[in-house]
Image (cartoon, rainbow, N blue to C red; front, side, top):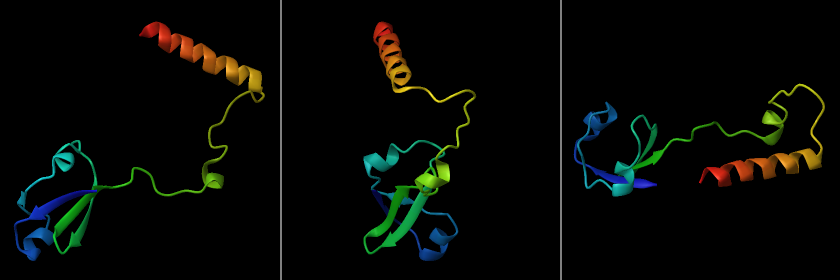
Length: 92
């Protein structure tokens, strides 16, 4: 989590306006467009990157990728991993 101290009154901060001072270098490294979660603490505002995805259970997403044909065997999966490792190693 990244902390910033705010230098403004609560009303302006609630409206999205605020002059942040003492920016933590890690907070400044957040990319443009990063959605933030703001939490008020006694030390000031605490900013953290919002999760990219909502929390889900395995049964919510299991089998969500559709594949044509029969399932791969373990040998076919192992061969695919080895082929990809060789391709990446050859690239370097």
